Image (tube, rainbow, N blue to C red):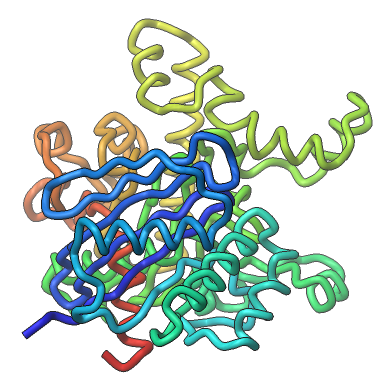
Length: 397
């Protein structure tokens, strides 16, 4: 009997990342990336059954790229005719309208287009991918899974900015949060690892990659998160500043002559670790700090201090904490960041065991001492599998 399968699509402005998954087992049957869409030098890398199939080809638009993806499945496998029940799409912004994964129809697609005002770099690409998939696979249900949806459970006291009413009502100024599929997946994994019912488990998830966010998860529900109206707020990131004084952009514009768009670009693309150290890759920052570079050492201190301050804040929000989970590229791979970010929190029951933390490993693992009051874990995230599972649930799988 053929297992139920979902094709997961994550469309960027010039790329399509894809994965064919069995949501019930977690098995990955095929995956790949089509990139440089609409540019010269387009390419597609298809992976299946331990093999890679690279192709150089011109990809004029997302529809052409998806056709190339389907052709790669047809030529190299696995056969999409067997067991495929739906297509799941990552969509960054669902605004206040979408609080769960949603079966796509024309009205939903129009709403995703309208929400592009809140995510101008991401929602148009998601909508383009959905249109291409509806055309290429018209007989399959298409499901939009929103990054922001997991955070719709954040209570008004945490999601509301103290700004004029028309900003909040007319213009949608609100803490939306992002990385929701990752926070949802990891918090469920934590409850499973602890052998605790999800609805009784309180977790702080630290999604630390080039983009980074913290999330307080109470009984499986997001109750606060560090990213806000945009992904710029919160933790220090590779090129994003994270929290700054709201008056800073006006001041910089006034003294430098930069227009608002240029200031915004600088805060998103020239700040964070890049602004502090000259490089955005945490691995290079750590190497420079180890060699005595004072800027790199300061960058690490600022990066880890910001994480620690959010952990303390979210412990206060939750009142009781069962676990802290590190995930994503930095969180899963940097023992240094994990150790420094939680240093000095022993009095709160939060301790990192040096040997466990430094030990190599790829799967979920504890890095706190045995019997610690708060479990500290490394839990690899899997956003594509989470999208696949939410898609299957939505279509009644």
